[in-house]
Length: 185
Image (cartoon, rainbow, N blue to C red; front, side):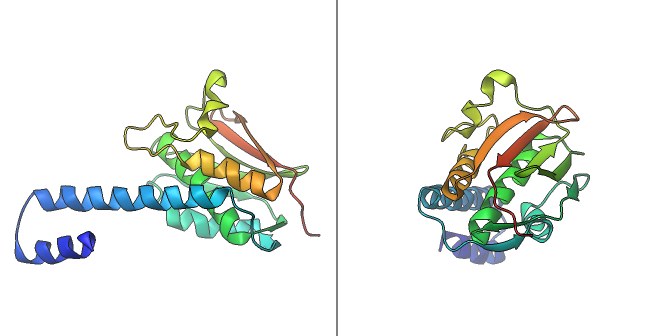
């Protein structure tokens, strides 16, 4: 309702404050969405269906609104058994995290593991002593971060019976490995 009223007001009045209001309302909406996703994260997942990772990752990348110079490299042909909606939430949060923390020209790579997949970037990475902390509710290094994104990732993985760990990527950035994943041949 506030967003609609702000749009209407913008048509009637010129004010430098309207942009700030719109930005604040958008941020509130993102935080609410994150909190709802976090709350759902602890629930039992829906039916597991075959999900083509390359297709899903591509769709998720388009929702992240990456920086112009950010690049996605998808090196997987895996089809996994998962709740597609929840898996999309996992990827959206990992991709958004890479774009927000990896720098303007970050390259994000999604690849295969023997029993799962990974999402890696070539950004600054996460110091070893903070790698467990990043999955805690509210942990964020960004001034405007909610601190729920990686917590959602962990909950979605756990709801599927998977494990998620963060390590250093091949190019020095962060690498999130999701293992214990059932694939479809």
